[in-house]
Image (cartoon, rainbow, N blue to C red):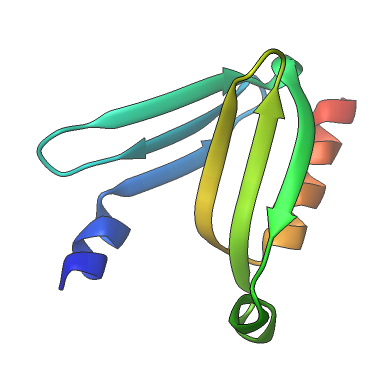
Length: 88
């Protein structure tokens, strides 16, 4: 039940200008990063993640800032979309 609540109260988005991660039901945590500040895009997948097609995408920005998208379906496709948005 706990994981279902987390699933429905988490929002992850990539726009043409920024990357946004929001989660929380009562308390809310929001992380945002301008897309032009992203330096590195990393994909982390466990063995089960590779089998079932999920993983984490970590965006590292200038300085020590970072945003992690957790349990993303098809993280390699998400990384591809981010790198295409960065090249535009």
